[in-house]
Length: 357
Image 1 (tube, helix red, strand yellow):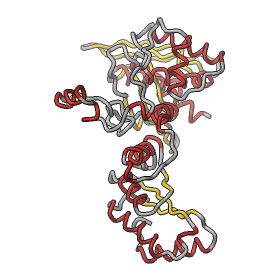
Image 2 (tube, one colour):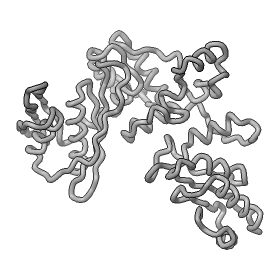
Image 3 (spheres, helix red, strand yellow):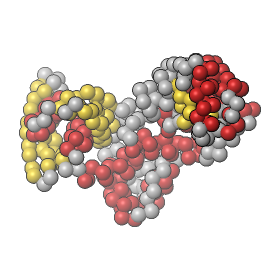
Image 4 (tube, one colour):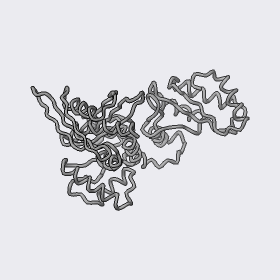
């Protein structure tokens, strides 16, 4: 619809409403429209479709040129009363309109006078939950839900915020469910504190057995690093899925350093059987993956390898995201560990488990 002639589009919309449609979606499928063009398109339909009162106009905007949110907002301002959005803006290619952006625009701009009936305090925990479940990290500078969205590093900004927070903060962090007074989790924290942080992040832990398992894993991680952040506990909450995998990492030993050839020994448990191999490589990760592939003996190609930013110090958990191609299909894997080489191997194994199913 985004690149369709408005007059012809109006005739199509009129015909489908006459045939019984109660919602008509107007997509900018390739994210091509300028906001003014998309707004004009919606306005034209509102004014030139004779039976428009019998249906709701909906928008579905893609972000290929970074204009999904602007186009969606223009659609709303010109008569659209349904908008298709996604948490964190995830979607095809560059993504779709972000739910959190549209929801908070309409909440902040009272003059628009449109109530979404969204409980915006659930935005941040739902964002973190979706990020964790889909293994898709949120970029730090992402509007509304990025970890830097409420961070002020510029001196003049810091001075202004200290004098009056509204100088540089148009949104109260609590309005999106961001708890500024978050309980800091350490090895001394109890089950109640862990349950609280899990619930804040949208994870239901009413099952005491599940909480016991998570608490045990939490204590093991807390022994390796000083403080546990929300990303860490979300990672722990999703780690139980690895327990059901047929391929598991039994052990990993790596020798590496300047002037020393990187060598890795890997042990795998495959459906109860033990396998081990060693290999050298161009660095510890390369050596470990080559050893892993010697055991699996499948033609696999690493397509993407991303290490999520570590910001809390050298003892923080490293998060690794991978895409591995096998038999013409691409599989997505995730690994997390205080040792980045181990996290990398676990991410690769995660991919293997997915194409073995």
